[in-house]
Amino acid sequence: MRLDAAVDLVGGGRLGPGLSNAYDGNVYLLRGDGGAWLADTGSGLDQGVLLARVEEALGGLPLLGALVTHAHADHAGGAAGLAANGTAIVAGPLTAELVRAADPGQLGLTAALRAGIYPAGYRFAPYPGVLTPAEAGLEEGPLRALPTPGHSADHTAWLFTAGGTTYACTGDLLFSRGRIVLPGAGDADVQALRRSLERLRAARPDVLLPGHGTPVMSDATWHIEQALSAFELGRLPGSFH
Image (cartoon, rainbow, N blue to C red):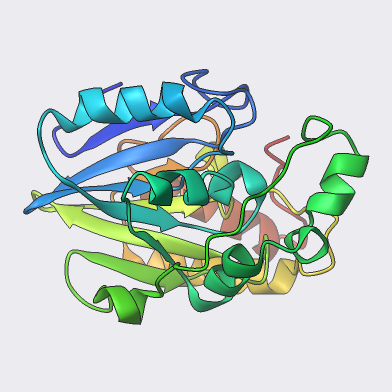
């Protein structure tokens, strides 16, 4: 699904566009100089459907790698499968550690399975070769990591600039209309999330590409301010779920 000249929405499940497995978060393809990057990897379930959409969207461009916003299974569970197809996987340092080990307890997957969030028998495959932004040479330039803990301690947003437009791949930090998700996991931190939203506002993105729901293709600051205004009024922003 072409969003504009630089971005395609190539995956997403029942909380998004329904383009791939029901348990997938949104997966975006970002076109830059010399090739394209994926933002998030989906759950890994029915990955052939996602891979076919990626191949179609690439249109002959090389796939340079996949960026992971955080280690929850709907965003990072497909990392090992993509890597098996030759795709480099890049994540923030904490996320990289979690994906390398794939310990269900540390991933929050044990509790999620118990709650029925994922199908019985779902397994998060480890991938020891995850690169950090420094290891991948993504500390500066048109594609860069922005640490954004809050939804989870390891959360990272990815900023991508193309054609004078800055896109923020926000994962589960922020959704359209200023909504958020604070899971019941022990590493969720509402004050850290507020500080991360302030950091995102300072980055001045034009477009928000959230991990679920509808992409925001203009006036991104308005959506960020909706969440921050709620905090300033002493209440939580609305919940995406």
